[in-house]
Length: 110
Image (cartoon, rainbow, N blue to C red; front, side, top):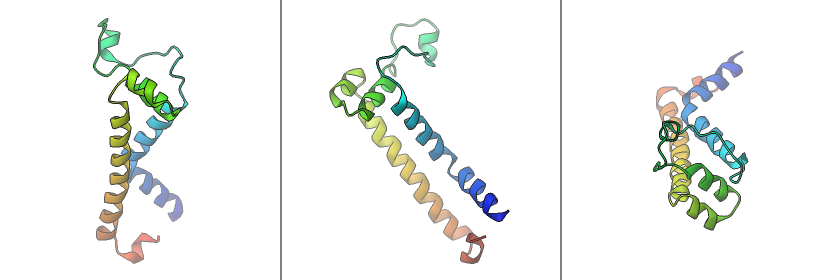
């Protein structure tokens, strides 16, 4: 039972990282040429221009290895992926350091 509790504790402590990983996997699996439903509030309000529109397509093109199309879809797609990856790494590193300070070695293996 303690193994299951440790798994849930690990997921809870790294929840933001798992959300970012899931988002990147979802964007990697989407077709950048296909029609999609937009979650953009500006698009849903009827505005024709949004500063973030095309970012998902850009990331999707990037995961397919097409850097030129990625840049044309949105110039900030490549930096966004880099920033998200750095954030994921930071979350895992910070939580590992935090756990070593809070829990003694004998409690970490429960």
